[in-house]
Image (tube, rainbow, N blue to C red; front, side, top):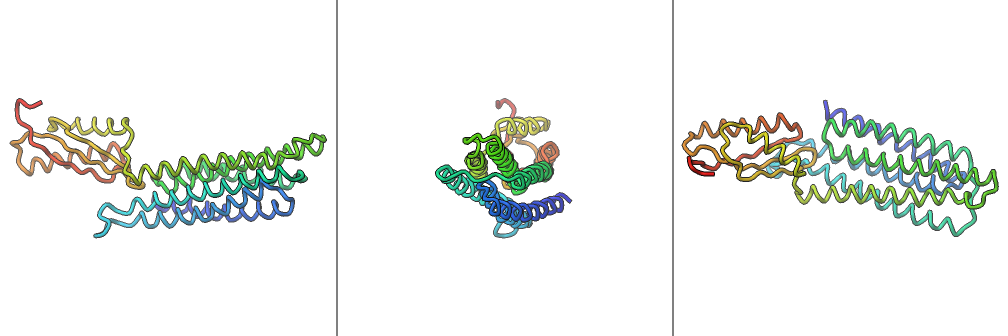
Length: 296
């Protein structure tokens, strides 16, 4: 059900990006709006990004196999990394052309261009809220990357709206410096999108490098393991993200006189407690160490 919701959200994002890309590029070219053209190119990159995220989600949903015993979860992380690269490339492209626009005469601002920017702003805000909700429900890295991509578009459309609006006011009231509101907005858009891309790339690298979960989450998982009565000591506990799920490794000490069956039951109890408390945990690997009376 959750996978189906993610796929539906991805298709809605893809179709929306196709429509908005066409609107921005057509209006931007017809009315010579630098920020709308740049934003339209950014949206074209979003089409590629959304298609990439969709493909990675399909791969990550495959069950473990002989070559990938831990599953295919990191396919989503790779997809998120590609999205981050597209965001960074789009930001650099937009920034470069926005700066060039300052060295030429200001272009005339049109209300139609302003209206297109407002439509994009509203649509992208709604898409961000929707996809972020789905990403939190499904714990999908690819869906979260798509949500952040929509957020980048919200910033871009907001800056475009303000920039085109200021340019229009500058022309109507003969305020020369306001006439450069369009390219100024383009610079702001590029910086905001660049930051989002860099942050997403950093998070992708952390997951691919098996960065540990936050100390707070590790401590919470540790507390649930301690609650198992038979656990005498926790020798080591590690947890890492593996795409849209989490893997936990634990070494715990139990009474050394217990039978194999009793140790097996303890492992099952530990797994169940951790996974019930943290639905994002897909696997808990537990190693038992012997403990004897008098040990710490």
